[in-house]
Amino acid sequence: MAVLAGTGIRKRFGGVEALRGVDISIEEGEVVGLMGDNGAGKSTLMKVLCGAVRPDGGTFTMNGGPVQLRSPRDATAHGIAVVYQDLALVDQRDVATNVFLGREPRRGLVVDRGRMRREARSVLDELSIRIASVRLPVGGLSGGQRQCIAIARAVHQGGRVVLLDEPTAALGPEQQANVLKLITRLKERGTAVIVVSHNVDHVLAVCDRVVVMRAGQVQGVRDARSTNAATIVGLILGDIAADTVVHTEVAS
Amino acid sequence: MTTTIDIATTRDAAPSPLRKLFGAHEFGVLSATLLIFLFCTVFVPNFLTSDNLISVAQQIAFIGIIGTGMTLLVIAGEIDLSVGSQYGFLSVMTAYTLTEMVLPVWLATVLVVGFGALIGLVQGLITTVAKVPSFVVTLAGLAILRGAALLVTDGVPMSGPPNPGFHDLVSGNAIGSLAAQTIWMAAVMLLFGWVLSRTKFGYDVYATGGNMKAATNAGIRAVRVKVLCFALTGALCGLAGVILVGWLGSANPLTGNGFELSVIAAVVVGGASLAGGVGSIVGTLLGALVAGLIGNALVLLGVEGNWQQVATGVLILTAVLINRFIASRQSALR
Ligand SMILES: Nc1ncnc2c1ncn2[C@@H]1O[C@H](COP(=O)(O)OP(=O)(O)O)[C@@H](O)[C@H]1O
Ligand SMILES: [Mg+2]
Image (cartoon, chains in turn purple, green):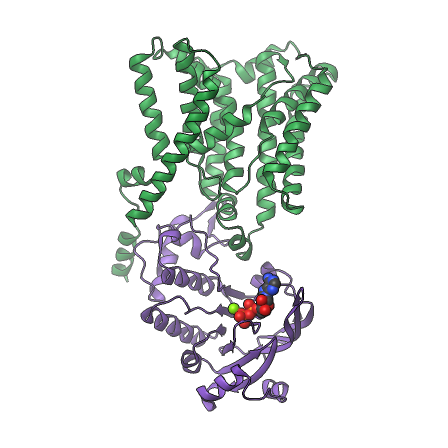
């Protein structure tokens, strides 16, 4: 059963129909790659799934039961964690605080800073993220390090579904490899991951399933093991006609 | 296992106290405080007497109390230009509830502080819900509340009740010859210094002002955080009003005219950024102290009172420039 599924999701921004009836679902421990040209609606779909954007239409279920995703709080409460394409860190605050943002461990009324630093460090180590000290303000770190901290937060706070919007876009090769390794590790932990990426090789390497969007609709869904880069690129460019069997394929 | 923990603790160990001091946002204002103090000690006659220092501590009490609320508000990314008018209006309200309505002091205090919180709540809601910049909302508040204070009193000071117990509580000699106002300021600053730097609410205030979108996405109720900071600032204006009326035994409707300038000066001089996300209560205390010391020195040197305004303005500019310099040096260090 799908840990998270959305059906018939629609979203319009003024004259732009960003999502025109999108169906998406993901299983426990599954990695879904979300691909598509710029403006296809990938980021909007991710924002809808994490409660940051209210859709105009569509229904959601988690483990078969209907859920409302009206706000990021709702989504977080349901175990959906997100890493935004436009990073969402508080530059003035240190690494540890950003890893725990909004969920600081407490001892009574007081934030347990010692525990926060220790746990932040162990999360960073687990993900092979190299940062000199968790006391550094994140504003002074490199783009790659900042992306990694954002992912570390999603991992640390995330429950069952982690959404990554172009997590490797701003990274050097080594850190890209770290992120891909990290996605695999999440999968092993039984976490469901939806990852937006423009890199077909990355997607085919770590994903179980590839969902290709085009102009606000799902153009095609492919099993990553039985497809190839040419097919995916064809779907992205619209050279390969849209599937009519999307629903059955997702359901099976 | 132990080795990893050891490595982790050394990597993330606190920097040495000296490094921490030089890197702190408050380093500029701390140096300024010390420099001014030294200068005054050497060049200003009668400066270094306990009576004079105690009176400086007494004079900055109101800036310190209201500045505490303003610090939280500025860190949360907002500003309140109406604090001077709130302070004046709530002073008048204190005198009114005590002399006209003849309420007991505790009840008058609860009403005034509560009404201050309500003023803050309304301004906070207009700012966050109607999305009008707080600069504009509280500029309107500045005019409305000053007008209200003048209307209620017909423009003449309203006398408070002759109540020696009340007077002692808010302005008597508390510890040794330290004035009670100073103790009230210390209590307020200690409490909210702790709230800001240690509690979840304090963390939320920094996150909200640092990056409201990130805070909201992380599940922090940023709007509520901001509104609470407005309400707190209003409540502290009420507290300051009650203390003032108890001290002077009367309320002048012009109380706090232009006071927002001194309060914002203390907060900014103390290292807070008007862009939000940066600042501290210790900084604000030092900022108030710098302003208090300069004012005191000018008086002792017999300089005309209007120069104090000029000095405050120069102080704000200098502080902002120094803070900018420190910020760029910090990023260069990394
Ligand atoms: N907040 C917004 N306001 C107006 N239009 C938007 C907004 N967000 C996205 N869009 C539009 O919706 C479409 C899909 O955008 P997006 O989801 O960001 O695409 P992708 O991430 O696939 O590149 C684009 O045409 C974009 O301009
Ligand atoms: Mg996008």
